[in-house]
Image (cartoon, rainbow, N blue to C red; front, side):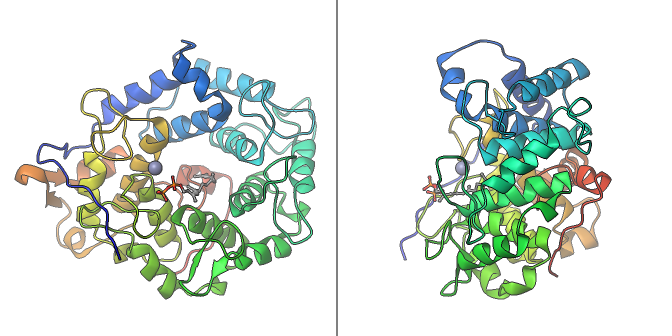
Length: 369
Ligand code: GRG
Ligand code: ZN
């Protein structure tokens, strides 16, 4: 099989550049400039705010109260009459942005329990009905009124309702049966719809859904763990499927999946740490998909999440032997694992939010060992 990969530069960063990332992320949301670039990504603004908020919370640099209130106000403006949430005012509501908005409100500890629209930022009853209205006979979900079906939307529905504590509103059994129809017996992995090519991003969506529903026993964790660990290339980076280049965001899609099935230690931690740190921009802060490329908040969140999983979930012999563990980096510089784990909070592998937020909300998920 053909392998495509990159080579890491000897001068790549080997330290976690926390202050630069905080500045980069804060600026992304508070920058009011209506540039061409900003307008081009307006259709995913709600998710952009979720990526940025979550990344900042993970490095303990959350927005101040004024900005948080501004974000909550924006969510209020994006609630559509159907109960679904729009990515930005004037755009169509979609399950993806509905999920992002619920994730933001949950992480801010805003009331999402009250059925009284006067007391709640969103009309919870209407939002639940919107999600319910998108479920099909076979258990699958449309992303919005236009009818595209994808297992990503199953996860958005199941994740949203779990955070709202309203999973009883959908047919969860048929939703999980559809997820299992996307399982490929041949490689033990998952695609976006039945008989579709396996892809790490979709594996995460399926495993997270199965974990919330307590149905992880339905997969072959060893076979899937093998497929996922095969995603690591010689550079240390991970790709999303065979024959593809490494990309930093798979440090989330692959690692969260391996964490959920209890097989995170099946990849080489040290090589991946080097790859993740090399994706940082030493001047602007932020992470890119590959070293030297343009940074963005999406890859910045997933770089930080990857570091969080590696430092908080991956216990190896090195750390057991030596609490001040360091590893060899580029130019023989040491990577200080303590500096990273002390700078980044624990991420929840199912919801991609602070683990402490999921605990505070009292949500239980399943993990394999
Ligand atoms: C709460 C973290 C979180 C997510 C919400 C939107 C979503 C749920 C998950 C997205 C999962 C994902 C990344 C799916 C990938 C779909 C896919 C087939 C991508 C292929 O894109 P290419 O071809 O990428 O650009 P590769 O790396 O395969 O070349
Ligand atoms: Zn990517």
